[in-house]
Image 1 (cartoon, rainbow, N blue to C red):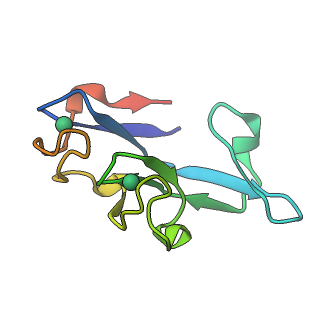
Image 2 (image 1 turned 120 degrees about the horizontal axis):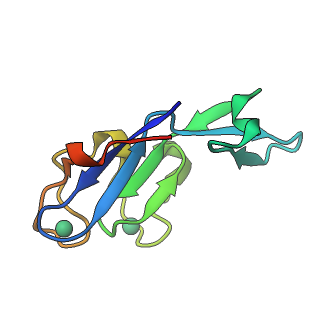
Image 3 (image 1 turned 90 degrees about the vertical axis):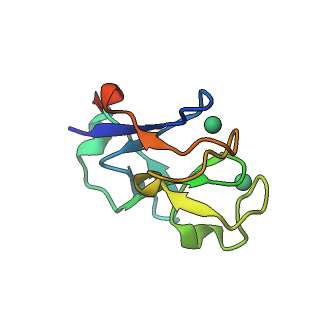
Length: 111
Ligand SMILES: [Zn+2]
Ligand SMILES: [Zn+2]
């Protein structure tokens, strides 16, 4: 069971989802990560780890991984302003730069 929080911008139609269970993954013997999502039977394990979702607050690019995995910054725009999606409340909207992202309680989702 996973739930998603939706952050929305009141000034434009930008929205970003945060899933409570992140992005679980298992590794091949060579270390390649494979992310698994509901309702994949693989999501019931065994799993090797869990990556957070990130949002680039400069360009709005959505990324999967630890902030440390992107030591060179956002792959799209090079910004270092990467924020975990659980921390988006109150962030300036990356799309219009005017609105402030807020949780939309009408868009809670369950998977
Ligand atoms: Zn970016
Ligand atoms: Zn906006």
